[in-house]
Length: 207
Image (tube, rainbow, N blue to C red):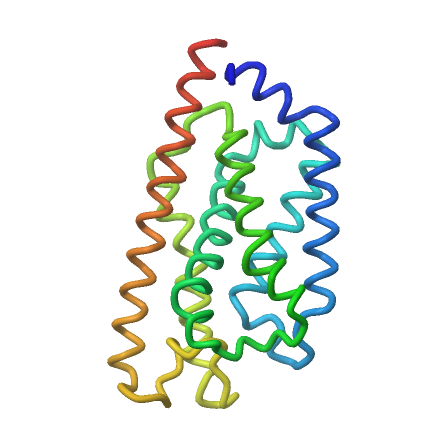
């Protein structure tokens, strides 16, 4: 697909309707997900909230996608990691992630991550991203990890088994999983940035 045509299509009515519909579906899933006071302590919930804002924002203001590359890249990174970590670490052991409804689990852990990533691949920002953007993207996961581990003992709650030091291996096991997830963030983050730079340079050359 020609980059100019692809960008125009990405801001057209079909893309706006699809993004709006996805935003509504994700919002409905969030509304039906979880039921306790730890709602906002799941990375899945926080990343999907961002995805909802992103999709609805782009549906309402289609030109937004050309001006918010760093924000879109961050949400794409968080959502892709959400889907991958669930598929690799949580789904195989049927971990309890607090979601009771199967369709909600499917939307938040599969549909939404795939949709956000595909949106980025098809319609990346028109300009390359800042060179240090990846480190800025890692600030939110770092804060999330810190809050989770600090709050865990007093709340007696850890959202995911690989962050729970009460299980076998204690904090050493948590540290190993944290390092592995960090490598995933770095790998996917570098790909997200590379894709934006690759396509952004092409669009810049076109004008």
